[in-house]
Length: 301
Image 1: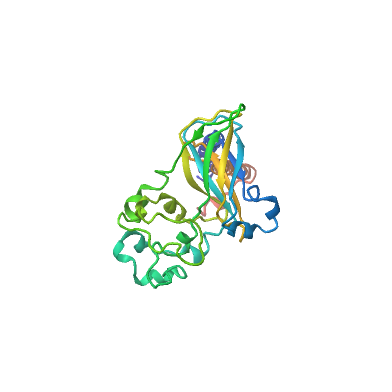
Image 2 (image 1 turned 90 degrees about the horizontal axis):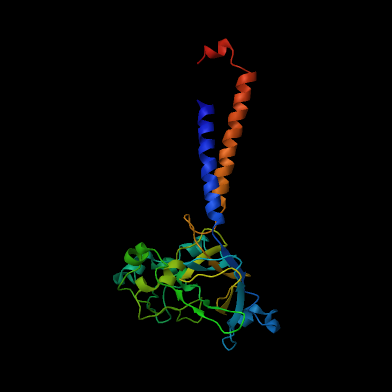
């Protein structure tokens, strides 16, 4: 029974792996790391001083060459490296009850948000905790750059980037930011105090903590086609302090396939597993042919 099962699994997994791998290869993406590119040359020796100096203009323009045609929708991601959102102290530094109910601004579990639990006047911070406090705040704007000069702005749509369950259940429609980033040490982006948390989708995406130190999070999408060989100018407002922990930042443009973004791992995993099953089945077959079970062994069955 073992050999037929191994053959069946191998013959099943190999086509699935080929299909997954082919689907992944049809997804095109452009990745550009800009954390060093956007630092003036005279500040490269002191990147932390550059990012903490509010008087320095932090806007820079980078050009992305589009190697393959990209059909709409084109998804925009930001990528961070060496940021450990999976650290236990960081990952637990939020209060889920506070996010969904205005009556839970103060509750017994708000202590998990320290040191971002209370403002200097003793009133609670909403949303509290290190996860919200470190909200990513670099911004991007895109424009086509034709060879003759000028350019057509590409609108980035930021609605619909979160999960519906987050908008309707996890983040409350009557919970508004309070005392957020009002301390002496500002961690990242600010929130609009006039909008409820259920409408602050950038916060929702950020608070979905990543499992690995290198991760991407959805920034928005562009409803336009890009042709092969086109150049897209990206105006980056480089405000997020990744220099204190020697992290890297990148902007990513990507299409999507039936399985989502580009990820050849799934296809390779199916292929390797399928081939391993076939090889093991072959080895067991050879063993059975050259070393058949003796009669006394059969009687033990």
